[in-house]
Length: 125
Image 1 (cartoon, rainbow, N blue to C red):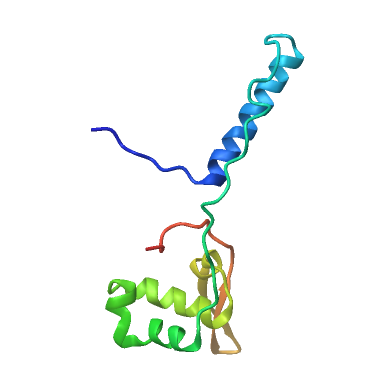
Image 2 (image 1 turned 60 degrees about the horizontal axis):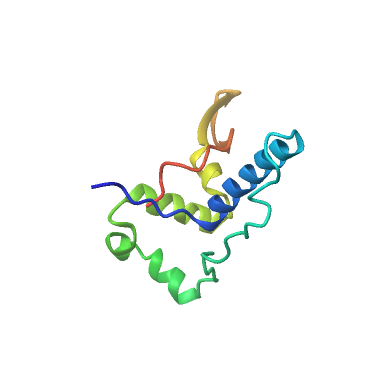
C-alpha cells in the first residue's frame, strides 16, 4: 500500500511557482512554444482558522492538573509552552535558552539567556 501525502496549499503554490518559472524560461529560450503552466490557477483555501484563547481556556490549558489531558503528560512540552505564553518568547527562543554561571568578587550570579534561536523542531506535539 502506498503512502498518501496531503499537500497544503502553500506548498502546492510554491511548486507551481517554480514550475511556471522553469517553463517560462524554456519558452523564452525556444525549447517549447509556450508556457503550459501560465494559466494554472493557484490553490486556495486550506488555511488554518486562528483565534485568541479566552482566559478560561488559558487557565485550563496551563492548569497543572491538566498536563496529561492537554500535553499528553509531556512536562517539557508543557513547560516550554508555559514559558512562551508567559514571556512572549517564540519556540526557537525558548529552546535556545542557556544558563550561564558568572562569578564576580566571589559571588556566583546565575543568568538565563537566549544565545541563539533554534529551528522550529523538536517539542511540537
